[in-house]
Image 1 (tube, rainbow, N blue to C red):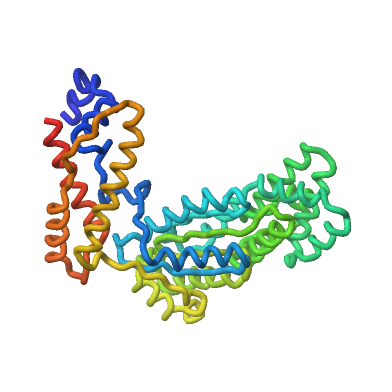
Image 2: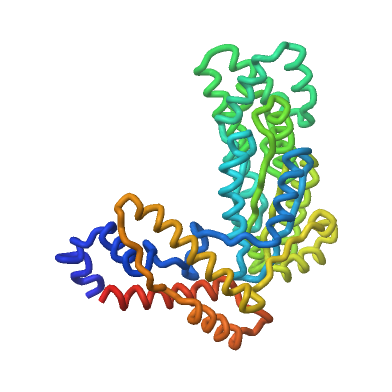
Length: 382
């Protein structure tokens, strides 16, 4: 019977702290130092030369607010998702408190661009609209009129004017109007309530209308200083042509290009996809080629030196993490290795001999290290 007696009797008496202490006293770690192939997030990423280019691009965007689009390319298992995860975490920590919005989106193989634009509006949310209107309401009437006059889309302008008016009446009416405005931006059908409260009569039901509305909301938010910029991290874009027709893929790619064109300021777009997908998309839509000229390619592990650097990085991080945690309990660190240097080197050479490409995928190497470490840990536990 599956799981029979696994969580009963003596097994329950072994606490997490007991397990971690035993591992630390044997290997100076609290858990397996390496991520397995299924763990695509929540594990450290070793800095690479490619980071400096992206860092400089982010710094330039911070200084100028001029939009930037970068294609992060690599074959499956090389580290695109790990790179986006790492930048997402750092951007959240350093720039989100300063008014930058960080949006992570994994492309679904759907015949529509709507989910992406919708996710941006969902991320901004009603609270962002509330803060922006409240900030505008504190300005002098001439400033309010000048800010609203810069809105290009008439319906967006009427919606914002209605929200400003509702904010000056009652909290209840303001909340109702905010909910209706949020629904309208998400593309809900226009009902009588939307018409009466917001003075809008047409649904945002096309890519063009949604993109224009997004552009106006972003620029309006920047003007009232409730938004400094948007980082949009778009992952696994190659999924778009895995099962869809060329016409549908072209429509999606055209919408991505339209988003870039609509926001010459305040957008930092990082698109992660395979190199062959980027080449196909550039051929399918030549206009996209000019928008994604910035390309950062993540290489495979090409030699033993790079493989050992990756092994050492994960081992050192695991030892550092364990030492910080173990200091409280005053545990004594063990000297055995979950995977020693010779074994790590041998694993890389074995994978290199079997590889069909000129290098080894990072995910494959780390998974092999994980399996070896798991074997050592299991042997110690018996």
